[in-house]
Length: 209
Image 1 (cartoon, rainbow, N blue to C red):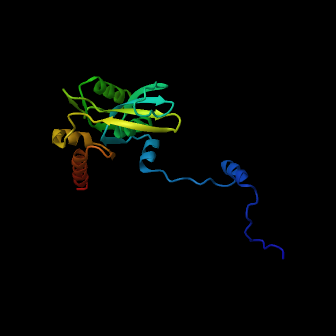
Image 2: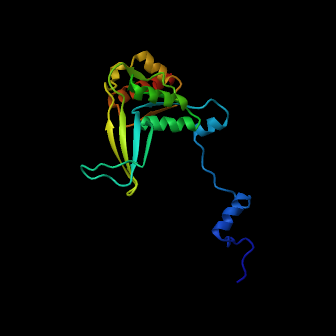
Image 3: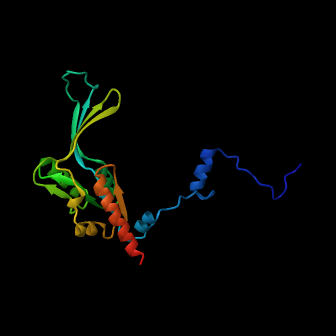
C-alpha cells in the first residue's frame, strides 16, 4: 500500500549523522534548562555570592609505587603540598567558575594557617570571616597515593583549638550572610553549621516581609 501523504516519516540516517545535522540546524538541538544562577551570570548581573562553612586544611600528597607494609621504609615518587578540605575545595571551584565565595572556618597562626589563607585569597575567596587562633595548629592531612592500586589513604590531623559556634558573633554572621545567594555546608563543624543555617533561615524569613 502506498504511504499516505501525511504519514510520519522516521529518520533513516545513522545516529552520528543526525547529531551532526542537529548542529547545522536540520534537527533542533535539545537544550537543557539553565539555572537561575547561570542565567544571572549570563545576563551580566553581579556574580552570585556563595558562603561556605566547613573544613579546610593543608594536604601533603606523597605518591608511592605501592602502599608500604608495616615497618617498611620507602621513598616517595612525588610530593605535592596544596590546600584541601571539603569547603576549601568547593569554594575554590566556585571562584574559578566566576562566583564570589566567602568562607567561615578556622586556622591557627602558624605556617600552615598562613599558607591556607594566602592560597584561598589568591583564588579570590573572601577570608575576612575566617577565625585565626594565636596558638595551636591548623588542620593538615597526609595523603599516601598508591600508584599501583590507584588509591589514596588519608591521615588527618584536626585543627586545634576547634571552631565553636560561640566564636561567631551575631554581627559577623549577619555580615557574612548579607547578599549571599548560596550557603554551602560540608560534614564538618556541625554546631557552627547549625548556627549559620538557623541565621540564614531567619534572614530569609525577614526578607519575605
